[in-house]
Image (cartoon, rainbow, N blue to C red; front, top):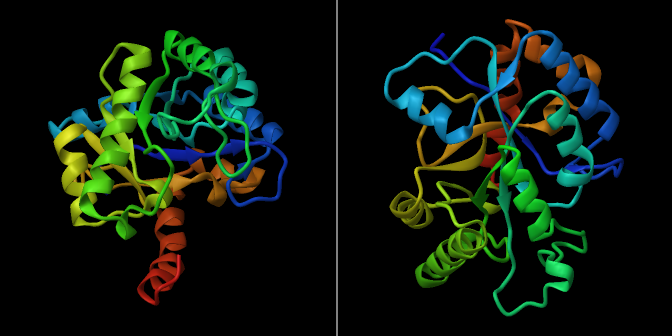
Length: 251
């Protein structure tokens, strides 16, 4: 099998039954288990650059990503990750520029509280990196090309304006992309993430990178597969019904 790096995707770290929620206790025990077994995080763009240059990833490395920018990333995940010297890329849905931002907080998404810019800056100073995830989290495949570019580029500009550094990565909302959105992403970013289920290799599509959604690791036994040689086969196996559903028009 080609050298690979797992790119794990989380959204909310809370006890809600939602498919995008991951229990805080399980997250903490998962990160501790990885750390105790010698696993270390590597930055998303660093991992991509290394593999595309033909390099082999360091043994037992993985990438952590969080989509949307929910406040629980700061309140629940960040303290755990600091404890183990881990970092992540957080893809921010920043809201329209005209939306009110009470207390410097990113406007709510689907009724949920989001990160504040002070929290974003604190995490950045601790080694986290931030990517763009559009302004309003639309399905980009249903928008006109001009609106797609506005959603993507304006979100990048807002984050760069706050952090004062380049935003190098992007994630498509709900993982949905087409040739137009992928073309725009390739002009403004070093890489872009889809929600296609897969591991990062030198053969991955740079502007439609596959990841492993935390939904597929949502108990101690499944999370423990990360420590096993069986993990790539588990990812492949879970991808079979997912691919069939998508070919039939489902998600």
